[in-house]
Image (cartoon, rainbow, N blue to C red; front, side, top):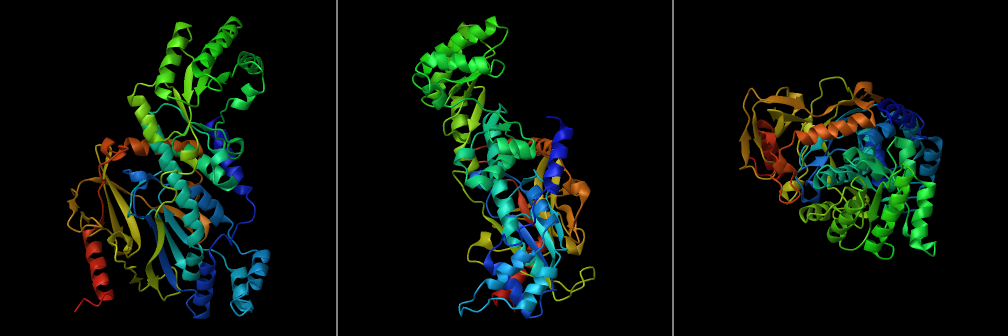
Length: 506
């Protein structure tokens, strides 16, 4: 599919969305909004910052994903009449309406004219650094929390998993085959899109192909073979129907015999000027069976017939099979990709980092910086209007600095690990850098140049990002820790706020 067609499909899909789902949130977001409004704080300016606490899957990085869905959501976000009607009927513990009519009228007229900055879709990101920032009236920024976490958290997990699979497969083709095991239709579509962003080469999900322009791929199942009394007849019939697209599943009864029968079909196709595209192995000792299948195919002169493997694969299994010398050319990954089997949730959070009683969005607010405390160091949030600066040397990412953009240029180029303050890194003053968070929305309007990006461009961006990451950070097991830290003066400010909140500052 051409780049132009993918871009057009993405744009038309966004414009064709149904009414935004303002009620895609937790009730406590609405009750807090009501309390802000009731106490006269609804227009106080606020900044919320999104980050995650640990790199997923025990890995060394994550791939930020889900921003396109966030843009779709924010672009049309309104409380519709039926939303207000529903909220008017929600009862409190006393059986009376939970919300008064005047507040519901306020919601009905409310526009989400917030500012949003985020890492571009497909960015390599790390724990403890901002990946998205929202600024605006606190009643609005608060309501957005649940939906934004939902959209970014799961997609980021799946895109990261897909990237790890491609790394494990040494860039061989990897296909997402998880629809039947996904967490419902919405989860399946989100997973198919996020998998493709992360590096998968296609999907079995036909609806995802239609909606997003993702290449679709598939063969037959065991039921096709079982519907015939003879396995060879099943293969021959399938080849007659799909002479240009014949990939046979060979393990319904006996895998080695199935390969031999597939070779017979391949020889008949060759006589017709066609060829057997491949065979799929879905069970058994994939390392042994693939090697034996390759021998048989080569002996028959079918050197270009591919061997595709499936069967509950993940990056660890793929890496092990390649290490064992498996003769596999492509990988179909289902359950463990779309469900993020070994880590089904990302520790993603959305924390208030700055607050002002001013209602003048464009003015100079008297910001009060906010820190959420915890007995666990990793759960203590960072204060400020945060930005992440990424440093590069010789085309390679070397460190990320989280700093307070409200105070202008960072005071130093020393970063302090947010979990262990004794770990610090000084960055040379002439080091190349880029600030990761870019404007996505201003006053409720999307920034076209930063949001109208095709799926093709996003996939290329992921590839470029991973190419700029040191191999040690991309190891599947025990990866090298990429340096992420607070700019020194921000660390000192955070420490001062913590001491004040704990009553330890004289």
